Image (tube, rainbow, N blue to C red; front, side, top):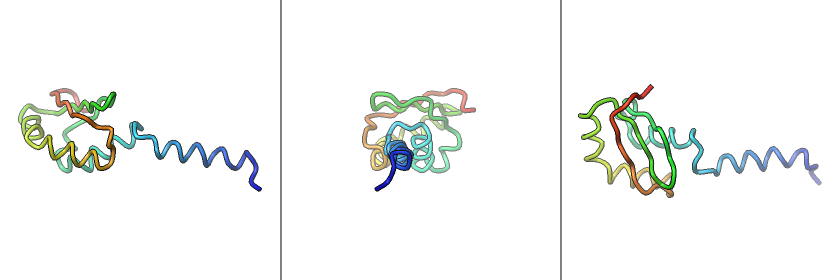
Length: 93
């Protein structure tokens, strides 16, 4: 029988990996979904199913907006809680 001291770290690790709102996971998923365009964006917030993303230029924001439905669909395959993406021109670093 395992001791509680051995079980607790495993439980905490499992909870962390399954937590959908983990900033690290959201950033990784965004970069995977956005592809090359992800390098010109920064995830700023994810609350109540809304992903807020800053983009470095209005032209890039327009391009991402035209792909929004596909981006949402692909993002939802990893994090189903996503309802919408809001793009805003802003600082990315």
